[in-house]
Amino acid sequence: MTAFREAMRRVITGDNAGGQSVVILDGGPSAMSGDADLGGLFEIWEDSTSAALDPRDHADLGTTRAVLGPRPGNVQVRWFVVSPLPDDVPKPQLDAMVRSVFAGFEGDRHIIDQSRHPAMHETHSIDVICLLQGDVSLVLEAGETRIKPGQVVIQRGTNHAWVAHGGPALLLAVLIDRPMAGT
Image (cartoon, rainbow, N blue to C red):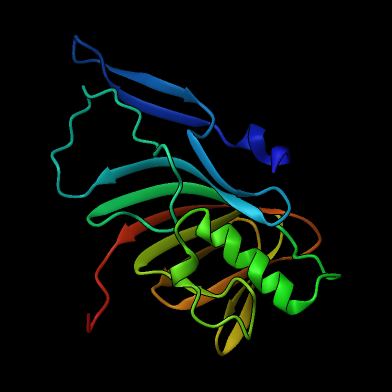
């Protein structure tokens, strides 16, 4: 994951006391959760979709602790890294390892069925995901789709996983909280 640190730069704008637009934050992610071998989440920004926008507020809204999905009523922006899974670990142990990583960012309850892939999980948000570096596949219950850098996935609350090919991959995600139909 350290290979991607240079690419993970946050430039956040706001207004100064005179009402002029300025850079208020310039640096790396504010919070990280994950595992150096399996991947992780790197928070950029999380904000309410219902609160009034105030460019004079200079608070760093990168969360202090990464969580899988946006909090109710919020939009979350993050980088995430997907690494190839080790192929020398027995499946039950690998499933437990992945579940433990997900527990670190409150995502273990989103793992429904690990039979297709250890990291299969369902999110309750609309996720706009762009592959920045690397080579990944999006694994779904009834198929798998290869994604190349610059391509975008709109993930709509479905059970899914990511598989990295040939090394770690860096993705950018915008997650928008949405209630699931029928809940």
